[in-house]
Image (cartoon, rainbow, N blue to C red):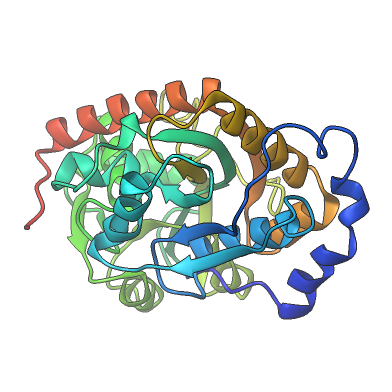
Length: 324
């Protein structure tokens, strides 16, 4: 889990309304009631952080309260269903991720059709970190890749659950390398990281929350999953090019109901981009390993389709199924 935003940092966002106001902010669509941003997971995690930072940045902009509502359940589907069924008036929005838009719906039925919704903007990205037990007999990424290729099924990789982003990223790595690393699924990230630290499994992908264990020398960081270096650890090698084409990220986005009117979409896109350019917003995200990465709907929608196509192929090739 990503640590929540400190209250002082969140409140600090309210101190810069003048940065958000201006001629553009005073024109176009204006809501006539509070805006709800539905976070489809409990308070305190990475998704919650992304939503609350955006809500705080938007509070001075729209002339209405911007309220975060945590609606957890069904692996994130419950909250997104509420957005899907809401009136397309711009006052009900949600925070999306691969789990409830691109990967999850490929593995289990959802009460909404993700790609028919209005994907207003991507908000943040962050890499997955390929971490290993500290006594792994491979000093760096090159040695690990050679070791994995030389020992079919001898390398044990763990994940926080079947069908999770870290699981599919490792299956993609298997496909790109032509290896057969053995999957050991866990019920959540915490037990996985505990067993990695104990040496029960060899490697695994994790989100940026694993950084303190790397920083303290409990785990070994081998690589990151994105094509670009990670600002927090720029010397860490990327897998792209070393493992074929490999560019995987954790991302969070802003979604609205289907058929959102163009004028409302344009205003929400504009204000999302404006908020993500604020230094205090970028810094608040960076403290938890996120990079502010706006992508408007015209580019975000094709990005999501490419993600669906990629993960559909991985799921099929690796014969992944989940219960329920």
